[in-house]
Length: 306
Image (cartoon, rainbow, N blue to C red; front, side):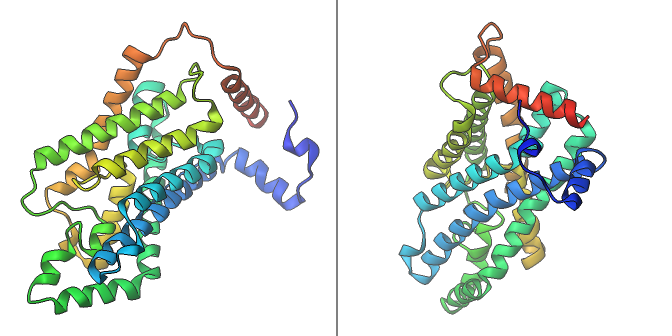
């Protein structure tokens, strides 16, 4: 097995840093990978989602669409997975990390670091988006304020308001039971696809195709079910919620729906994991050559850096 260092020489400073990264600082590199992965996923998706909302307020329908938003989230997922997976495993979702703790023996301390990094990635991405679109957001808020007394306050913290791109909300009067069902079913679907992609015996999804397949699962959920209210990732929801609270104060809390958006993904992911292991996984199947190559590469890296 040929290592990159056997073919290309790095600067001595970078060589020393790499030794530290493989040793005491490896946890920091993993957390950075989780942080930047969630950052990319949220940055691409929320940016398009915000344009869709602002376009409706400013009567500029060409700014974005539900299709574009779904495609943006899918693209962000692809970027995030290919960037983070070689370093951290590409969890990018607290539900996935918690499922790994309970089903695959993932270390608890390492998991806590991942959770913090994931939520922080979503938080920083949303704050940056707000700064970049600050003028357009203020323009939209001005339009709502001029529309009549109370219109801004009635719209701001709804799916049609600017804050609705950062912290998720449902329309007043919506059935929280149906909203929970919508979130839970979509999250189970996405997690089943993720577990399918993680299965090293799956002949139809080679490792290089997994980021695209997972991205498409998120896109389908957005295209079909985001109008009812969909978070699909606890880190995206909590990061965005904290950003909205930072920007607009406690009025952005989201009420009872906030708990659904933040927490439903975790039991849904655990259920999907159980369903896959019980009915779809088969340890009598043969590991594919492409998956085996990755498993051996990771084992060699662990041995060389350990």
